[in-house]
Structures are given as structure tokens and as C-alpha cells.
Length: 365
Ligand SMILES: [Zn+2]
Ligand SMILES: [Zn+2]
Image (cartoon, rainbow, N blue to C red):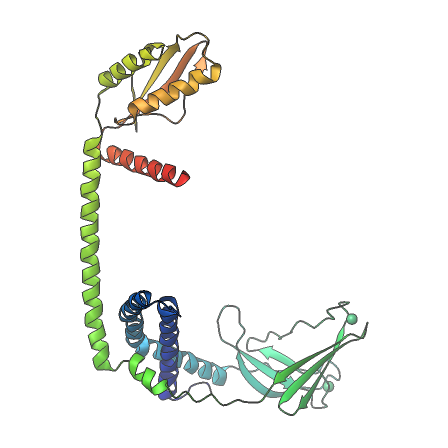
């Protein structure tokens, strides 16, 4: 029978609770107190430790109290289902010995615990009345249980298994029929009683809450949730305000103004005949442009990269950007595309991109 009295499950659950809370507490003790020799650090560590107990370990104990009934019920139902399956499952009939062909006798049954999908299956064991070996085992659906046969780890040859019982031990000896390699495995069968735990009662009272303490935990949990929600709200309001301030700093230029800006500044750098085509208005506002290099002897590479740098620097504080497809040269004409940012959400995107770039370049340093 798998089902045990209710108190068994409660005690088991409480023992796990104490174990979990003790581990968590130990973890904080090691991280915050440790063997800190200097006094100021010790005081700081003590404080952090107390906070972690309050916000973490005590909350864990509360959570365990909150889930206790549900989990105990689940575990009892699981064992109840095993018992009912074990009593209702029918053994297959007509199981015969593979050696002497006698009808085999049912000698036992159990729940098969190693199912890959967590489903419960019953395994039935059969023995030959003439004691031929091996026994056979079948699942409740009639499928035979056929464990993989052991092979020699040295030569992959067939292995003869021999099991003997010694004082407090089961000894399995595998002997290879091909190369004679012997491997011995010992299983301890002594049942060691659990170590007495003199601190358990103290920790049980600390970590396994009574219903009255549990109710207090629920109140505290909902208060913390409200406080968290409030601070999140504050946080997002602050973030929104900051974003609006950043957007206000962007110099917003219309098409004519950006054209004028580039024309004047590019001429200083000896790029001329700046020409803007009509804007392409789709998902984005995009304007193709062409310009020519008037400085003699400017290296091929400098023409493109120099221009790119100049334009990027000129536009950095504005709502315009050189598009990522860059600048091309053909027959002495340099061409590229600009994107204009207009709507509030586009400007917000621009702010975010600038900030990412800032983070990147400060990390790169
Ligand atoms: Zn037989
Ligand atoms: Zn071998």
C-alpha cells in the first residue's frame, strides 16, 4: 500500500520546509556574515542578514504554509491513485517459461517508478514452477518488461550475473564469458535510523507557521505587493518624465532646414552640389540625396568615410539620421539617404538609440 496516514505527509512536508529555510538562512549567513574580521563590515553584514531573513526566509516559510494543504493533498492523491491502480490492474494470462514452457506463477506486483512520462504502470513478476531462470515481468497492458542485458565494459561480451547476500550487503558479481573480466558492485542493505536533530523543534516553530501566523503572512504579502506596485508606478512616471525631457532636447528641423544645414556645412568641407530628391513617405520618412567631392586629391576612402562622419556629426543633435545603408559613390557622385524622425514615438526611439550608443561607447573604453 502506498497511501499513508495524513500526519505522515504533514510531517514530511514540514521537514522539507525546515530543510529549505535552514539552507536559505545558511546561504545568507555565509554571504553576509562569514568570517568577516573587521567590525564595521560585521555590523553591515548583520544588517543585511537580518533584512534577508525578513524579506526572504520568512516569506519562504509563509509560502510553504500557503501551499501546504494543496501539496499534501496532491501527494496523498498520487499515492491513492497508485493503490487503486495496483488493486485494479489485471495481470496478463498465459505467461509461459521460455525454457520448459510450463505456465508461470504470479509472484508479485509493483508500481513501475521509472516511466519516462510520469504515468503509473503496474509491473507483474512471474516465476517458473520448476524454478528455471530468468523470471519474466509484464506490464499491465501485456507488454513484456525486457531490461537491457549488461555487457562487459572491456570487450562488450556477454556477462554472467551472480547475486549473493552478505551481512548487511547485496553483492553483485558480473563475470564476462568472453574475456573473464570481473566487476563487483556492493549495495548496502543496512537501514540506518535518522540522526537525531535536537534543533528541529526550535526551527519547526520558526519555519512551520501556525494558521494564525499564516494569516499574518498573507497580510504582509499583500502589503508588500502594494508597496512594490507603487514604487514601480513611481519608477515608470520618472522614466516617462526623463524621456520627455530628452525628446525636448532634440533640435527638430524640417526638410528645408536640414537641407540648408548640410549645404552650408558641407561646402566648408569642399563637398558641393548637394541635391535632395523628393522624400519617400512610407513607414519612415526617407530622403535620398547626392553630393559631389570638390577637393582634389582626396583619397577614395576619405571621400566616403569623411562625408559619412561629417553628416553624422552634423545631425547628432537633430531629428535626422543618415540611414544605415551608408554612402555610395558612382561616377564621382556620392549618394545616400536620410531619415527624418517626426512623431513622438519615433523621437523616443531616437533617444533610446542614442542612449544605447552611449552605453556601448562607455563600455568600450
Ligand atoms: Zn521453466
Ligand atoms: Zn569481456
